[in-house]
Amino acid sequence: MKLLYNALIYTQDPLHPTESAILIDRERIVAVGEANNLLPQYPNAEKQNMGGRIILPGLTDAHLHLKHYSLGLQKIDCETDTKEECLRRVAERIEKAKPGEWILGHGWNQNVWGNWPTAAELDVVAPNNPVYLTAKSLHASWANTAALKLATITAQTSDPHNGRIQRDAKGNATGVLLESAMELVGHTIPEPTLHEIASAMEKAQAILWKMGLTGVHDFDRRDSFMALQQLHGQGKLKLRVLKNLPVELLDQAHALGLGAGFGDDWLRIGSIKAFMDGALGPHTAAMFQPYIGEESNRGILNMDGEELFEHGRKAAQVGLAMTVHAIGDRANHEVLNAYEQLRNYEKENHLPALRHRIEHVQVIHPDDVARLGKMNIIASMQPIHATSDMLMADAFWGERSRLAYAMKTQLGYGARLALGSDAPVESPNPFRGIHAAVTRRRADGSPSVEGWYPEQRLSMAEALEGYTLGPAYAANMESRLGRLAPNYLADLIVLEASQDPFTCNADDLLTMQSSATMVGGEWVYTSVTENGA
Ligand SMILES: [Zn+2]
Image (cartoon, rainbow, N blue to C red; front, side, top):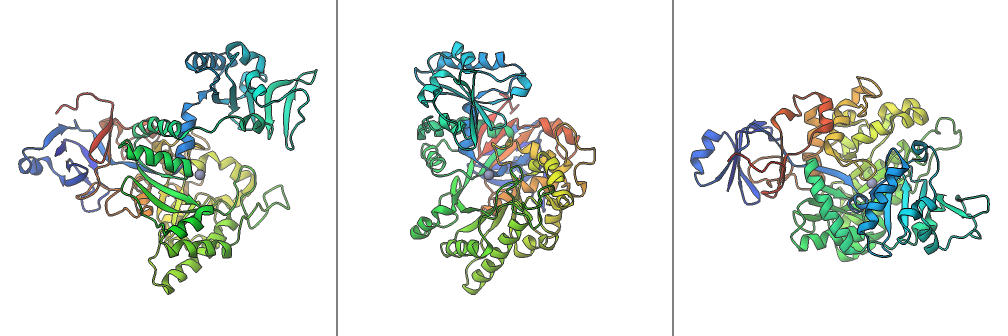
């Protein structure tokens, strides 16, 4: 048994919102209370003086792509002020690389560097290994000669549809590939092995603990699932993972009778993921009214509510909930129509009301705004997208943005929030998400002190619930995850005493991180060697 005392514990338990001591037996919490009461009762417990530090339930990111995020961390960081620094990093990586091994990187920007880079520049530091570095925009990539050779790109290769191979005066490829031409090299890069994915995830896990995360809802696919199973089998998975399945596999899941919750407290099946529309950036989110400045563009709707209902009905038969990507107001409307039918279907067939969710709910029509709460649909939202997308939303949706990432409104109508990051699109750092949720400001302070549509700001308690109890509810685990109370899983994070999120300056959230993380009763990360026991 472990007794952590002399702490300020925010329990998320309405009966005891704050306490100073917590007793843990193996993976579960036994009691939360006052040290004076607990100490004499459990004289043999291993005592740890927390020195007045803050304890919160472990945080969960309710939407990320674990494989892509983990593999991304392995790439060279090319977001450098100068091209020379980027080349130096490539040279450093080359030193440790095996012959012929692909060297991957991401993040460069020709506007920052002042000119386009060339294959010849890369060849100097990487004469033998193929190198492929994607631009921060993801609309261009930079390859060396070895990579161009493997992709058999020569002066004779013609530009693909919607793409361009940058060329010199003689027609030879310079090393920069634009748009669809990126794939010419991209396709030749071997897929990472299962072992490579698992080992990347293991490293990523340690970074997530430090950020304060003890759980994730993963939206990557088969090889992500397989790598997670491998880690779990080896006893190395120390994050609570909810695994969602793509709708293309619904028939197989249905044939198998694979239902939500199959697995265990570490790795379990979540729901069926479908896409209703595109995104705001490429103007493919499905809208009722056109995009500003594009009279005929209302985005793209992948399917209508009827078709989605058919998927949902099939999923419900094996106890799988639906989780549907919906960005535009029209897409959200169609999903809600399908969910309305699905709720009726559940009732008529005496099926349990499943934990259906909508991913993003980026903009919703005023007539639909109350429907999530009314039907008990989970709003899985990404607070940091609200601020990263605000300028685009204002420009192309205008006044409709009043109900963009309308988290407070959703809470007001009784919807549950499950908050996340969509990493690697954004950093999975939950404190950055909490900052965006409570300020509706970017890290640089824009757009204003009040924030973007400030009426949508959440309180700290609401934001924290969105990263704890909300995701736990979405995973059907709210009876044992998301708060610090007897019988709950001992997943918690420790913050320095000076980092109380409830009393600190909101901008201090941007640099907040866990100083110790416990998952299942085990300290998996700690920055302090002495806890002063
Ligand atoms: Zn996603």
